[in-house]
Amino acid sequence: MPLDQLLLFVAAYLVCVGLRMLLASKPSAINLEAATAGNTGASDLNGVFLRGFWTNALNPKVALFFLAFVPQFIGLGIRLALTDNPGT
Image 1 (cartoon, rainbow, N blue to C red):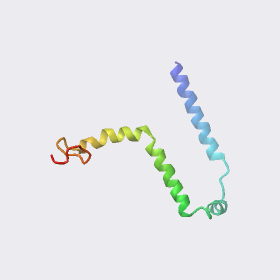
Image 2 (tube, rainbow, N blue to C red):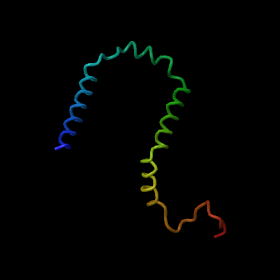
Image 3 (tube, rainbow, N blue to C red):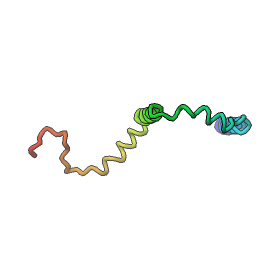
Image 4 (tube, rainbow, N blue to C red):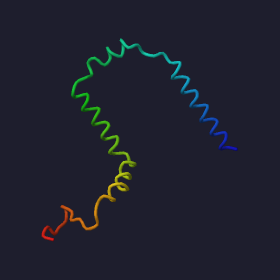
């Protein structure tokens, strides 16, 4: 019974959020163009790239994905470049 109440509460919350988004006043295209007119420089794009990079790099799910996905493509007999014995 408590799980059903929780599900109903979450569903009601999502409906409220959706209705607020639909009923909110939408900004006009003129305001959007004026707001973004000066923000097309390379430094802004670099900032966006760096923010996205660090967001993904610090996400633990990304590390788990690479730990699960990449090892299947590395052979067991491969010699790594970081080994101490370069002659073997």
